[in-house]
Length: 310
Image (cartoon, rainbow, N blue to C red; front, side):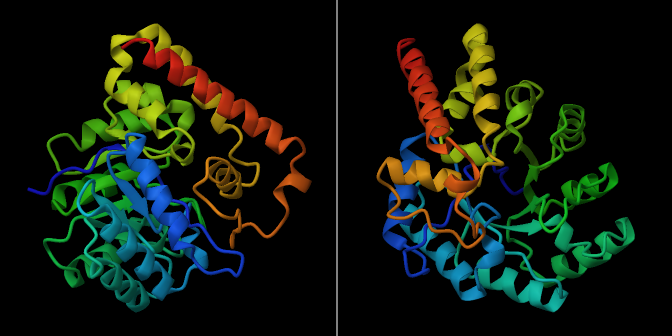
């Protein structure tokens, strides 16, 4: 049986140089920062990575670089599953698999591009499964772009019972759904890892296998503490969970550039260049830097309080 992929799994950013190319020096610093801050695995070439704005060669190069830089210290999975045509999808998934990453993640809306329902989803999925190596660990990602395609209970159970899938990046943003999914996948290799900060702590207590939301690009260590030690300190955990929810409310203010500003502040990124965001986030979102100041101050505060526990 394949091993579940769980824990704190940052959705990786892609740093770009001023000329628009991928900045691998910054990417290396980012990888080391993720590890130093308690990450259990990394999710490369995802929406936070701006995968829809990367060509296939770039997606492959990034996945290869992350895998080589990690050198087996923690697992890495990658997606890059963006095409409409299923033959193109198979080509991109095989190319990413050939990089040697620990798993390849399928995007649920690409398995049903017209949102036609379970029959279309199953047909497309079965064709891909028959064409991909049987021993390749796979993941599922309810990516919200170009549309959010949530799995039905029957679809989830079908995937879990296949034995091919090790993780679902759950984007239901709904605690009862997460709780039900945890029960549906019990005893299978498929881990349910929530991606929504608003329910992160409650989802962990309900049995979700970690966290993989966008604010893992600010403070993955705080989510790691919640996951591993929160139940020992329930009052502080409840308080920290409220802070994490409020901090994550900044996501609509120009993410992923928002996170790149933070990563530039701490010395990991050389620029805040983005292909997904074409506007000046500071001009559109007034007092953005002041907001990030408060996120940083709150993060530092809770790190000190956690550190004081010994």
